Length: 469
Ligand SMILES: [Zn+2]
Image 1 (tube, rainbow, N blue to C red):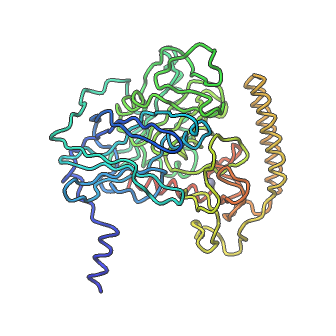
Image 2 (image 1 turned 180 degrees about the horizontal axis):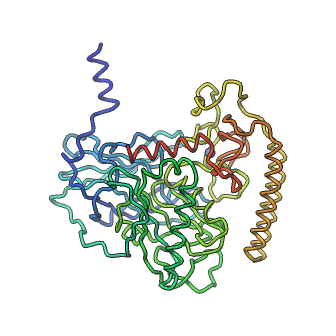
Image 3 (image 1 turned 45 degrees about the vertical axis):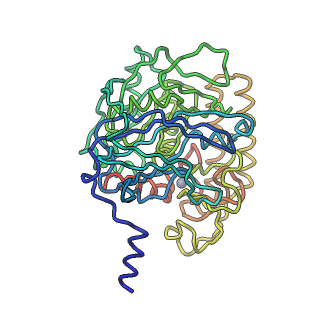
């Protein structure tokens, strides 16, 4: 029985070979084109690139976290032992849930990074299906004796250390790059880096875990100041280095960087676990994709909030807890399926609630709150905001509207029952009904929040542990 049990345990958790036995200590990047539409896809490898020293953990190579829409698995080609596994998300996976993906094909350049192997490996990419079970969508092999690897020196940009607390393999290495900063704007970039790094580390759990991080900035000058806007195509092109574009998927506030290769080359100049792109713009916007990058309008009045919220997606795979703002995705978080993200739930089974241990016994589930009133003021705000945007009103007017709305929500929340408790509050993950968030407010829910809810804070801490323990 004991023998059977140990065999079963081996099947569930096979021993991961020692890092130095199979890895050279460098980072290998597989670059590929990922194209398709809502129904089909194709991955075409464009090359392998040798980056610097492996900055990730050398002991937690198979991620203890089950996060991400996709995941990459590296196996020893002979023994098929899993050497490395980590979840991630892609722009393609977001785009294919939007309306245009039903009518047209589109291609994105993507990469996965893992420790460079000494021998032949198999690389597999899987994605969760509608029930959240993983299914493979691409597999290839890499043999260092046969494959061509681009090992030219990395030259893109100048690296500056913001702060360093120790060996990159035992720390979270956060790399900040800037897009839309022309040569003359580089002093502003340095200022944004310092200001926003301090803002991030002023919030828990980052504040208490600051010593588990190294922070680096890589300076790359863009030819012109500012970023492009897909919704204003007649404006002169900015040609910023990382291809950042506001108006991604038709949303003015959604900004993604599309020049994956340039971004990877720059980020690889420093030890890199997680990348943040600061956007040289005052216009409210940003975006965050798990284990890819996050962006934020670094010159906006809301820069600190944008950085911290979007970094929550990028670093910790947190879901949006809000549901009243318009998004371009269709049929995400379908009813009936428990979301895999740590901070939202369909609450199918109260006893099995994933943050049950943080709920005090006398808290009612679902937890009542003044949702009807909140929905009314939020919908009115969203409609007014959209009208102001459409009329091309100045940023200051939008900021004033946002401030007024925030004050209204402040009053509403000040009178809400069950403040500062962990429960299950209706409205989360872009759905007013059927999905629940852990607390009344959280940085993943609203711009007014100053802290993460306890569930998000714990999820972030667990990610830090996966790099730094
Ligand atoms: Zn939260």
